[in-house]
Image 1 (spheres, rainbow, N blue to C red):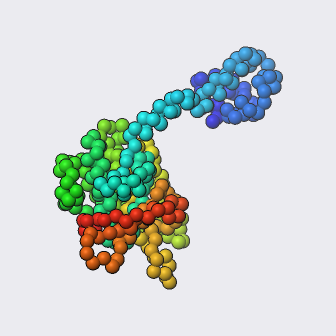
Image 2: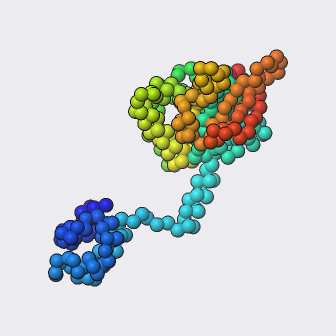
Image 3: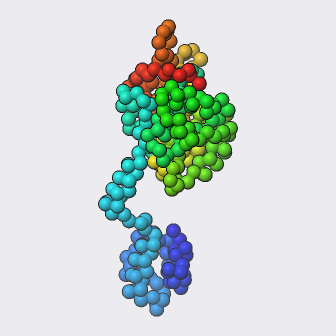
Length: 309
């Protein structure tokens, strides 16, 4: 920081005298020479040694980051942890599989069409609202395909309280700017703010921006994902981002999350959903693979009794 920015805390005549000997920033003032050496270089009579020492200490105080005791930091962390969101779907084993993925995290759900991404995301919101009567959940639809009737059917099937739908907020955003404006309107200090946010889907918003010949789209993606991460961290919220799938390559039938490896690096966890084929009777099952650092950690089979949206 330039010393001139510390006026009037530091006198103008002192800063002018320091500039004559090449001292222009707080780094120059504090680390380029000792107080005695600096005093001997200053014009005679411009300042006393005691005053120079005082103003050096004042500059260090003004430019330093505010301190915090370990006790205060622990208290803040404990308060944030009390607000942690525990992801739940009503299935005890699957909820154990999801433990630790909520609160201050960005979770990616990816898979082919019909793999149950939307169904899982809606169930996560609804069970969260049922367990937390002061919270709201926001569902951002980027394609216009979702309706609250789908949430109502899950409430009925799972026998959840019907009044939780009053706190299920559905909004539509068809471009990146609309989602960013929505994030800026969230008041994280307001009681009842959004603790669980779903964006379904992110692919049509970011996909058209990405290009092999330009880095501008990638920069927009990074900026947007940092905004998402900041919201999750600062509000103790869980952000669930649904991403479509893409082919592994022209000669492979394998599928992978869309938007490339850079996108996966900007989420905390990726859940890869697949529909289990060859079933003739009973509820439709999907496999859920948890991917961290591009490595499969564990796999779970979950019955999704609602049709895939």
